[in-house]
Length: 319
Ligand code: PMV
Image 1: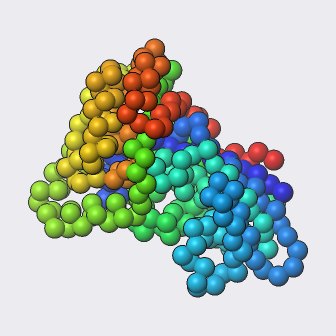
Image 2 (image 1 turned 90 degrees about the vertical axis):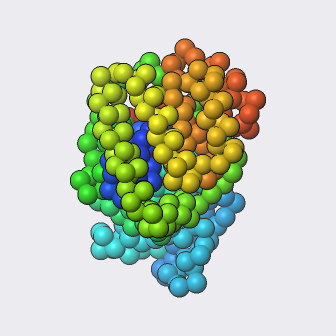
């Protein structure tokens, strides 16, 4: 049996705009998905079990299996085996600390960990580029047109600036003075649907939307520079502007606005939707010393409030 884990993420700047090739910035956080894979004997089948989702499915690669909630895990494992050129029956167990459907990259982290654990179980060295690329294929099943930022940050960890056509660069930033406080709107949503909604708005009003995309790209470049010089005040200001753009493209709602404004009022340096929006989490950038106070205040308006740390660790094979 082989086990691998991979981190969830927070997008600091640029979700949605990154789908149309603008740059974006993401950090890996200290919540992880953990996947164990065991090769079985006998006929081809992949059994996927997720105690968290209370689901267990036996996949044989049939058309009707495609709608299953665990199908992307099967797809990631089968794609990893196709890459290696060895198809075996498998048992896969998925566990995750990352809240699902909340904008924190849980599906990508599960895909990355599944690919890495499958390769490890079949005795292959883990090549990060391969892992990320194969995980992307499974993300395409979940989201339709993913930018690739989620599987990239989950594979490599740390903080990255990412652009679809160019790949990523690692940002050298010291995050020790700050904390990312996340508050949950409690509204689940589908990334694929939100991405389709924003793209349709862009298609209908290109002359209005194009400058917003351009502005988002500039924001990401400025945030990259500000992070590297440790200027978190500027990062916060730019996150606020980014939230305005996300509202403009239609992915905010009353609940998310309430959390964004509560975070700012409590003293966050900046606050915005993170991930696809429509629900999920709001991220607030805070000085570390303000973390407890801001979390206390947010607990009055959100059922789930968490503080996360940036994690340098990307995908790892644990055993
Ligand atoms: O909400 P999440 O964690 O699935 O993040 C999606 C980020 C988007 O930019 C909205 C989509 C993408 O593929 O980049």
